[in-house]
Structure formats: structure tokens, C-alpha cells
Image (cartoon, rainbow, N blue to C red; front, side):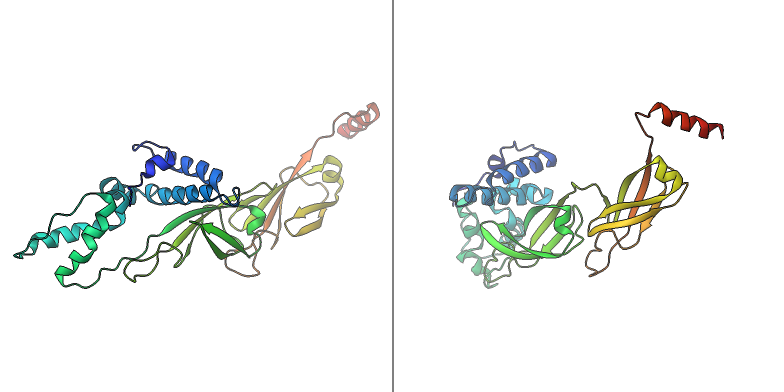
Length: 291
């Protein structure tokens, strides 16, 4: 197998920072994502390479191993243990020195020669995969199923309502293939939740600013509020002050993995001063000020 340069795939230098790696990955992942390049085998191949490169270089520990051992970084610990055992093993027929060519690296270390130690077939758990899933706020308002394409494979997952921005969920057994009959690795999905609504979210609570005119604030009245599950009519008390906050219980965001439970919606009133008053209206305000 040919050595794969993950730095070259992401178009970054070997001294690139974690931020540089993340920016490069996101840019390329968007460009070659299968959803944007349907039936494009070359884009699918590049998308797979980009994910593989990011999985290694975005993890500082894995990156260090890769810099030292190249493509076979995942077996660095086994290699070091194997080398130590080899030095301690006093055998008449000394094994030939391991090839440092990355294409034969794993076979030379863990192939037929490793059986000379009498330890049986070596097994290694599959590599963990990492992926980002970009969703809108309303996409995580209700539990739903979604199909993801990870390294060219379609995976059907359930996305629970209430997932938060930056939250990581593990999908067991959907990582890389194990070696020697060992189990597969896991898939770790990082959720990037984009909020384009007028609501501000703090975990399961929502916050909304609502403008009311001065007449409603002074005299009281009825207004209509948009919530995530429909419109609600509210009564504004007379003499309501600016920045008054009210709470609508249970009208917030779903609580993660608590079916049917929601946070609260907090509404802050902002009193708007009227503009472009007529002369008559100004006179009335003057009379009020004298009172």
C-alpha cells in the first residue's frame, strides 16, 4: 500500500495548528460531501480521504503517533511492545529487521513472524471515526431518524430531541473494521446546531425579546407570541415596565432524553416609543406630563 500523506490531503503544513486543521477539514468536507456531489465517485473518494485525515490529525495524541509511524500510527503501542519483547527474546534464529516502508509496516510487524512468540493471532480493535453533523435548531426540536454517509457507507441513526450544540454522541460499532476478528471501532458524531430563529437557547430554556407599544404597556392589552409549537396569546398588565420578564412554563426546548419534558420560555418586553407624532398627539402627551 502506498503511504498516504494526511497533511497533503488537507492542504496544510506539518506545523499546522488545531484551528488550521479544523478550518481545512470543514472547507473540504463541504466541497466534497456526497450530498452535494451525487454519483460522483471521485468526490466520494476524496471525502473519504478527508475524513480519514481529520480523524488522525485532529487528535493530538494520534497526530503525534502518525508523525512518528506514518499511516500505521494506530499500531504504535503494539509496535513498541513488540520491539521490547524482541530484544528480550533470546532465540538462536534472530528475526530479520522490520521494514520501515509504511506499505509493509503492519505485515512485517504483526504478520506470520509475530507468531514465533507463541502468542497466537494478534487482534486489534477497529479505528474510531469522528464526524460533524450540521443541523438547524428546529432539526433537533423533535426526535427523528436520519441517514448519514460516513466513509462511503450509509448509516441510519436516531437523533434525540434536545441535542445541544457541540454535543458528542457515540454510535457503537460503526467505526473502522477490526483486525483478526477484533470488534469494530465506534463512530463519534459532533453536533453543530445553527440557530437562525429569533429565540436564544440556553440548554432547554428559550429567551425571546418582544416589542410592545407604549399604549399597551400603560393601559394593558393582549398580544400574540410565536413559540416553537405555535402561537400563544398573552395579557399584558397595565403599567408594565420596560424589560419586564415573564415565564411561559413548558414552552421552551425539549429536555434531552426526557420524552415529553420541556424547558421554559422567558419573554422580555421592550417598550417602543412612538415616532412621527402629530401635533395633536404631542399636545396630549404634554397634557399628560402636566398631570
